[in-house]
Length: 134
Image 1 (tube, rainbow, N blue to C red):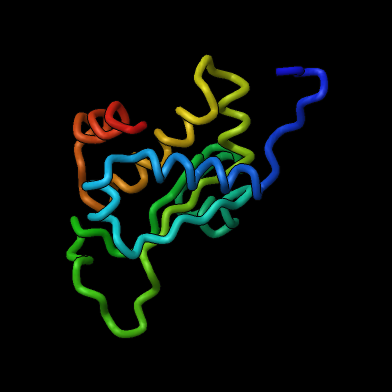
Image 2: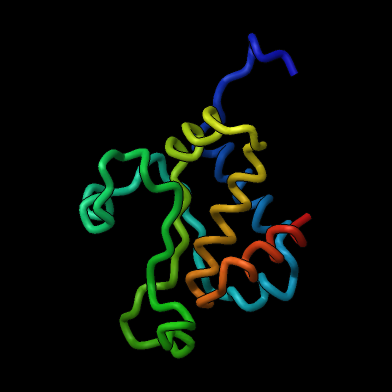
């Protein structure tokens, strides 16, 4: 790769990277996530930053919103928004610049961690899923 000519991924390119990370997760895990919406945004909204007690807009890499299975969210209620996983492009890129990991591995980690909240998974469970990701 010619780094002198490289640009950071756009929001659309980052979304494609997140979709590829999703597609690489074990099939049985993806089937359990039916109905979870994946969204990529540059930064968390101000109300999210306030609610999470973030010091800066770079503190949160991803977020699960909705009613996860661990909170009794298996049954869809009238008027309920879909469960969503947000991945925040700029904080992830900032994290990538400061660590010795591939961007794809970081996106997969954030995705698995946030979906893990949907299921109430342990850190060990999430690590196994990450390792099984293609």
